[in-house]
Length: 257
Length: 272
Image (tube, rainbow over all chains, first blue to last red; front, side, top):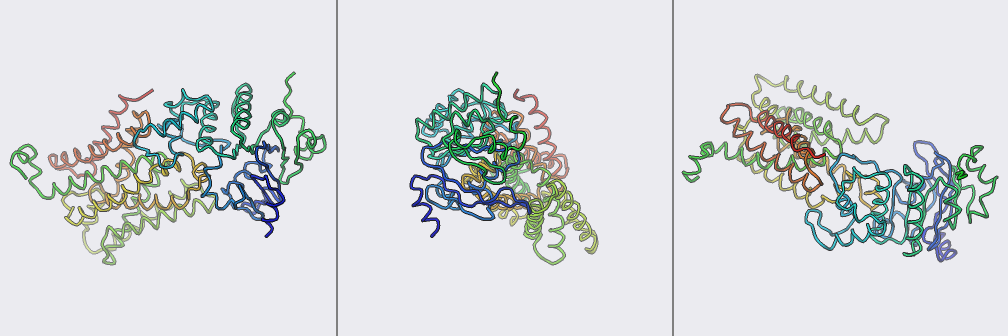
């Protein structure tokens, strides 16, 4: 089978995406996207708004049905993801929820823990939750209401949620959308440190080329199609950036001077 | 019934009040529990629409000689599935789709009632609830359905909270969110059906929404929210029924007004 061949070609692959296309309502959101993310790697997807980044992430996670192509995660078809979702930590771009609803950080994290009773307070789950919060320096937030958290605090809680089952693969969809710049830098450092300490593989979306240069082992330029992939310093050139972003490439460079 | 209890609570002497209080406790509990999820998912209008759809279901039942409550369950399920299907498969907002089904099924209900011979007291009792109309069979049906719905709601509460909190997160963890949408709607339709005889079609959604709304004003977290909602639901149902006995008022509106009173009180304890 084709998939078996591909797997033997990439023995260290955690994520294998082959010829993936997504069509929604007659509109092609992205097509023929293929790439490999190896174990322990940080891969960052870049591209302008509407390039299909979020939809690519959602399709990889089996939240959208692809028109063509296949996704293999840990050597298994992503359609069986229900059986091994514990090994993947997913952080959505925005968390749409009713901010007035009374639910605490503890309760939200409790939802992720299988077999933990929701109605009875017990020590085991609380210890696990505290440990995950510790990784994002958020222990003090445990009894806060989720709706009262600041943007940066909420991102850390979502990261703790993603880390709760001790996943091997982290999938982060533009994790710093809506966080101020200092917040952003701490957040990327956090992810970088976690990735090193816990031997995580990371796939994430970012708008920020500085972040890409600093942290990415592999960059994936997406604009409906995959326009470049490889180490940032090798593949991010004026021509590839212009292909990806059009003539607005300059706007995506953060100027710190 | 021991004499001392009857002296203190004289209405307990009457079997119809015993039945009504039993059903009242069950539906107060049930509506308040499911109401927490309904309000969390902003489905108040939806629950109101499927409650009104029950009228057409009951009328159809009477017309074709089927028991009204099962007919109501079936018809509300059809309406609930129709609303969900059109919301997923058209460009129309759920608000619009619900509005269409709401008025359509209500019109159908009124039309069907008009087709019956003579004055339909029985049908009217379904509109506002009638404790006198609660039979022994209704009690058994109500307790059975309540037990069934509560079992699903509490066994799967983590999952339901997760879907209500964020569908994408739930789906990414392998939860079949669409399947659970349909299961949840079935539970809601059953809840409405169980409550018809006591609170009536017009007001059942109040018993679903108001306790959760009152609890939401004061609760610091989800578990307290659930507990308070249930307390408000049960207290409203019981004291509303007893008040309606003494004041000789219809049970449904009395129950709802008690719960509205508790809702207003909840503003006093509102958390910042």
